[in-house]
Length: 307
Length: 262
Image (cartoon, rainbow over all chains, first blue to last red; front, top):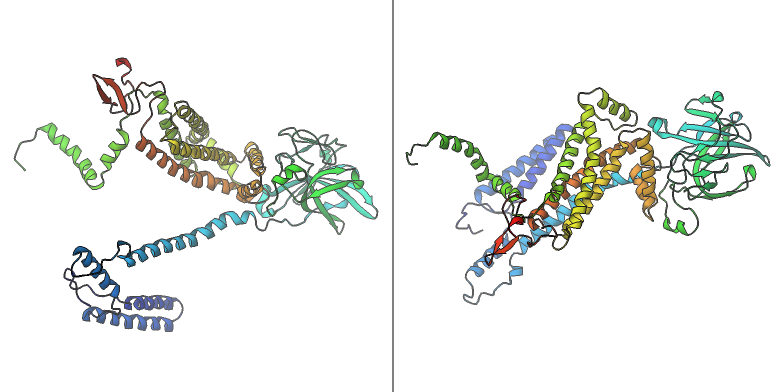
């Protein structure tokens, strides 16, 4: 390599420092993992350090770096133009290496930025949509649900979260349908904007039962449900009778195990025909309050997030 | 240096100016501040044009009081309400700082709307200031987002159910509404993460965006200058024609202008 006039002792490009760095890394890892690895790292580091220092002292480069020579030639050509038939280089191709470095810096920056940003954004967004299902919850023995009247059942869907996970449903035993017991389990989330609907009628507070995290409050012949926020009204099947709600109240599925009632997954209901065990429930996947589940307006909500 | 004897006042002046000069020579900050604050404005600007600065002041008050409140507030469903009670009732001047933040929030929103109304009625959104109007609208939505997310933090019945309703209103937006609602509450229902989520959005995400947008907003104000009121006989930055010469606008923040010399 021809030494430049202004920088007579600048060494040429060398790959040995890379090997030296690798050796140091292996050495450090070895301090944690095992002494053999540390020793290996020390050997690598020393070997490359020797090569590197020899390189510096003798001034011989690992790579001949023809690019640099070409650049110098081009620069010289531009400084002394039209001299002795030197082909003029177009300006766009004069510094291919700087162009490459520019592109690779931007590209690498974008890659690194993406590597950092994408998982963080995923962490922000994805937990709201994954693992959303809720386990069936024991809400007490069947004998606590007298036929024909609603019992207000509240329970914690996730005890580790505490009171914030408390849910409420209105549960009514409808007697047997054929040989199977029939229950009406209505969610208390108003179908307008999610406020808690209240039973329109007196509560039988004296007979409130407390079972672990479940509270059962019987009601006395209520006439339906009403929402305190914006006045939505529902009948005892959860059908909207007045006010702003766009559909009937949501319901819960249920199961019976060992004589106990288990509350299952919630689902949305457009309307209910008939009453009690003879009711025909028009069932839809769970939607947020305020969303139509059928009719023209339901086209506005083609996809529901996983509930 | 010549051996001229300095008077006492000159000495004092030099002593005061030395650190300022030192700073200016190394950073140019004095010139920058002068460029930012001592701009030419039309002579007939009036008090309505201080609404933007008032809004900025309201936001700075919110940022400061909010930062201090964050030192005592606990964004946890089981501790949020009691920490608010603690701030209000037990801590020294806690009632005051919380009150400043709570009422200052309304002041901030009201001032934003008044500032927006001033810009609209003065026609100050027109060329070349359209982009600043757009940034201002973004700032308005950010401010309303602050109001929405901050409302949940006391974690009482009002804030809880207001947030349920607010989230479900978001949920009724077409197509992506349900996803937005579920993102906001961090799940199908409001849960233990919802409060801390709102807290993070309220005190980090949106304020960061607001700071950045205010920076852009002010940059454009400095770059484009202040508009005259619509009833102005002066064009922006140009004075009335006196003695056949167009005089330039007055320097500094004087509001008295040339009204008397028409």
